[in-house]
Amino acid sequence: MLRRAKGSASCSRPARERRRRPRLEPPVPFRLCGLPGVVHDVSRGGLSLHLPGPIAPQTVLELGLVDAHGHRCAFTARVVWCEKRSPCRAGLEFVNLTARQDAWLALRFLGWLAPAEEEEPVAASPERTRSLLLRQGVLLERLASRPGAEEWLAELEGGQRVAAVHYSSLCGPLHAGQAVLLNLTALALDLGTGGRAFVVGPLCPELDDYPGREAGHQIKLRYTPLQHRVRTVEDPASPHRDALVACAELGGVPVVCAELHSQMAAAALAARATCPDLQLVYLMTDGAALPIAWSRLVAVLKSAGVLAATITTGQAFGGDYEAVSLPSALIAARAVAGADVILVSQGPGNAGTGTTFGFSGTQQAEALHAAAALGGQPVAVLRASDADPRPRHQGISHHSLTLLGRLTLCTCTVPLPAGEDARRLRTSLAEAGIIRHTLAEVAVE
Image (cartoon, rainbow, N blue to C red):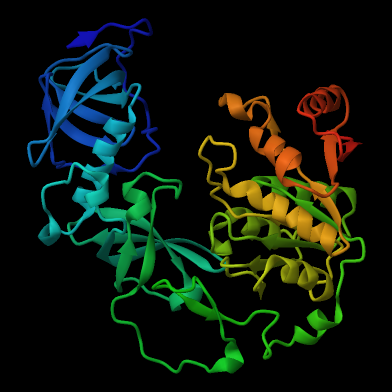
């Protein structure tokens, strides 16, 4: 069944594939119903079909997909492109995908990526599905590298190929042709990992000596299969312990606390532009990504000399320095890394739920409190946007209103862009009853 929608009548195929989500490549375990044709490939956002004849772009179709076990799900899809010949291929995007439809696709992705010997009828209830998807693969080619992380092309047992991230601090160097265990969970669920799997470790690790407590004995990712030891600044074996113990407060050092990882980078660049000689130290908390090596922003800022040092705290790991707690990390930034300005945020991958308190950026309030308690100058970065399509984040985000209005008990400095934007933001904060903080207008380009 199809419905014609208003739009261009062109049937040309795009010069390059623009789909951003990982897909199931042919042959795929789906059968098309309700429309003559064959499924070529499918992703969580749409699918490509072989059709007997062309269909005009913007045409809306009602179709069904049937999996290998006979389970069917109906979808609405819009034609994005179509070849001008018969037979032809066409690319479609799903329209108004419901939570049930998305869950149906997610479970099929999990089933497709699972080893063949583990295949079984897909459970209808989410409670019966596995929460962790592991699979063996072989590393084919190193695609990219940055400090602490490598990206590899890996081939799974069934022949599918995926991009996979390897953290060298966890299991050492790897090489092409090596058999590894891969975590495909986020890839199968189409989560925010850029379409990448993660290397858990080699299947046959080389046996070597494992240093004793002199190399550190604090554990991060505690009580998980990937728990590993680090030498923190607090460790008795650390050369920085004495400096840490001797320092009890921050002495007025500005502590710029942001909700989002990208805001940290903007604040760092602004500080460096204002005073190129500032020693900027970034403290990454454990609210989002735990390995700091996942952040391309940090790699770029370090290589450009914008950040002098990094500290990972809590369960986050991989910084130039490791710390057990947020207050201890703040002291280490000052006493060990010599910070003139301390920047604090979670890593990439902020989690939000659309509820008042259900977002990982609440750690911004914890950082502001710790900075104030230790004699630093707490500076709160405001989250505001005119471009975010979500109403709850337009203007001042409801995250910032919650953080500054209800969760932050100390008085903070809140920078605002000078001019009309500052007046508009001041009004929004006042209307929300947020009046106890110091609002400081700063020049912007």
